[in-house]
Image 1: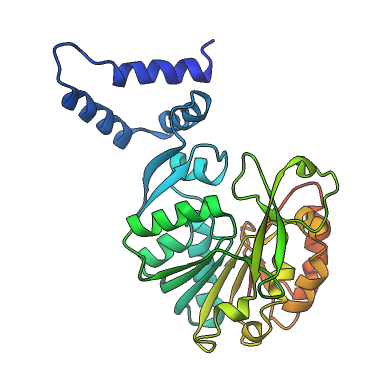
Image 2 (image 1 turned 60 degrees about the horizontal axis):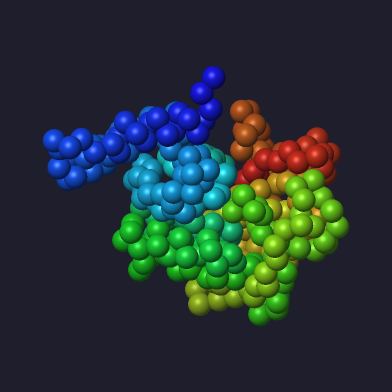
Length: 315
């Protein structure tokens, strides 16, 4: 049976072999046409081959109304963007619809994208007109470089402000961040260096500066905003730095990952900072049932600390 690499090499030979009777420009056109029209399986083969064959660290993809440069070393967010053309933007649009249903209004001038990675949420949110502008918070320098590039190629430098910090409970402190070797969306602020399910104790580490969410919106504290936060279990500790913002009860979409919260010791902080909200909806629950905030421990127990997670809309 052909291996994935054999298939990718075969595919590459088909599109890259130069016929002596054809000019290089024509061959380059064939390559471009193939990449533009590549289907799901072909994109999967190409992406996976880039890493295995050490061909390129980056790939370019057009995903819906947005354009992205992605990391070929990232087996998760970048891979999904390249292969499927999206990450979790469908969850974003569903959350906006639910806010409109439950609150009667879903107009938000500002998106706070906490844990923005390479822009998979903030860029299409602005390009599609769901928000006027965004503040994208991303502590990892490697992700930030692509985030800046992706904002630029989408013509959004005047609408998305990048903050290369880690959202936390205090400003300008140094925090230790563990760097996942193959999941660039799983870099985490470390609260413990104990061995874990994902080999965290062996990860490379870096130090990053922190910033409070209230500091991010200090210039315009009363402007309505929508908060999207995916920071690998650190959400509760980041919300400790959002006291003034949370008093206005902006809609929050939070990753809810008991394993990450256990490692960060952040679940109690999440409960306390959101207890004044009306309730939450698990976005992967087909019933989209509103549950009281007092049910958060039940959701924690249901998912367990084995690695399962969901995203919740808090309104």
